[in-house]
Image (cartoon, rainbow over all chains, first blue to last red):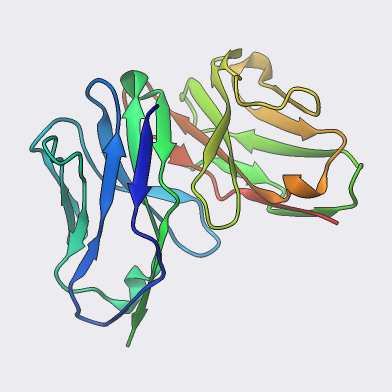
Length: 112
Length: 112
């Protein structure tokens, strides 16, 4: 069945460090791929998305590229800030976007 | 524009007691979802509504869980009776056709 696997956390970085959170997926057909972010005490917010192979989603300095050949959608940011501390969820959307399957989440801590 | 509203934000109950959660989606969003998010995991779908019709309730434990979306707007999720394993965050999300999902802040349920 369709599934998402992302790297386990927590990930702890110093401010201005480079971030990579790995995400791979298994899906039939051509899913859309998403990264959601969850700040403490809040609901999930869409961070970025890509709807087809080789698309690059980007937002707030984060980016991820839809790689069909490696079934991956790794999240990257060149210089993290303390305010980026949150839980990041990789997800895939199927059935025309009406069904979304989430990974387990990766908690990021950024130290000043 | 107001986001997805959920209440209560927190609920603590004794096992075997009933509990209900309420969600008001973003105005005009026909699709509404209820998810359960266990600690350290991603959200898992319980039920999806298109307007007032439940179109995917395959993951809803129907022996104790029920949901309704009268008039196709706000929705209620009920658990009766609650069990210890029901402790989780219950998330509501909505989206207009063909777009990403918008999440509410969730209700954190603790069953003692």
